Length: 239
Image 1 (cartoon, one colour):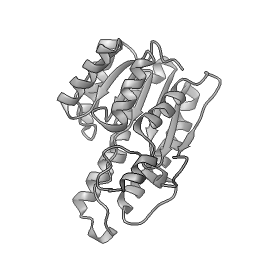
Image 2 (image 1 turned 90 degrees about the horizontal axis):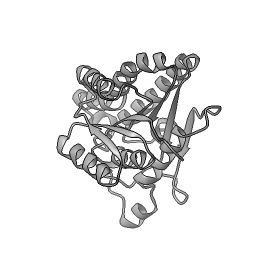
Image 3 (image 1 turned 120 degrees about the vertical axis):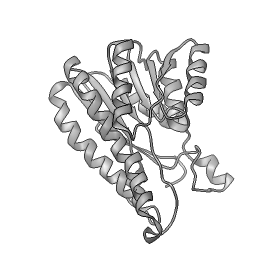
């Protein structure tokens, strides 16, 4: 696996899956553009990447704000001149509760984080990728974006919407040699609030590194191969 020379924007890079993906991409030779709201966590990540011989820059960004997303893309092109990969790894469950206990504001926040942010970032990178006639966009979905479960209905709805968005955009961009993949991980042992699995269950979950490896694999496939959707599950649990 090698991503040498690729410029990769990774959202949600300040923690969890995004953090692990940024570290792995840098180890595999990509220049990482780390985007998230927490500036201090991004600076720590970029420092860690540099200490291990990699290349990375941080661009603090709230990806639910389209103006900040445009700034992220402008900064990347100004400094690096290309965008080869976009990994949309931002996500939020918010809480576990029956649907009638979710407020309108909570619904809005879940939708903005899980769906609108992907629309903003994808829309912003498309002109550059079309111009290059190359690019890969990986959207991090969830297994509940394929098979819903109770008490996280707004999150399930958002991830189902992400699946449809990804499928449509993939068809739009394929003629330009730009490809969209959606990865559907099961529950991952990160900061998975508001879930509180027992310690024994946690030990059997996917790790952030597991999912990062799958994302990197998608981005390093031969140019003759495309993978539209990739489910990734723990070997031991159906969660």
